[in-house]
Length: 95
Image (cartoon, rainbow, N blue to C red):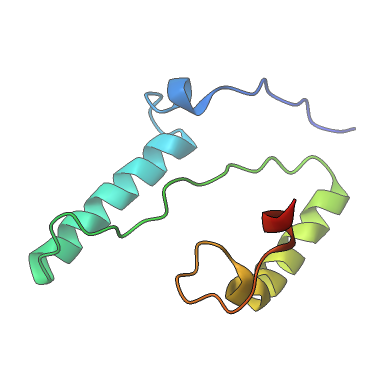
């Protein structure tokens, strides 16, 4: 029997819920940034990507796709629009 799917909440509201994913990620980023600045001052430098995406694993197919994505995704970095030295273009850029 599948587990019930919790309602999807906006990250805006979840941020203030203790032990929620957004709160944990925010705390982690803040702590690591402070530690980096202690050893190598980088005021105003961007250290983190702007956002992240929570992923709900709803079935076996989703579960199987995640390790595949993790292993295959770096192979397309040379095409990514976020890569400042990209050597190609993403298909999505032409749509």
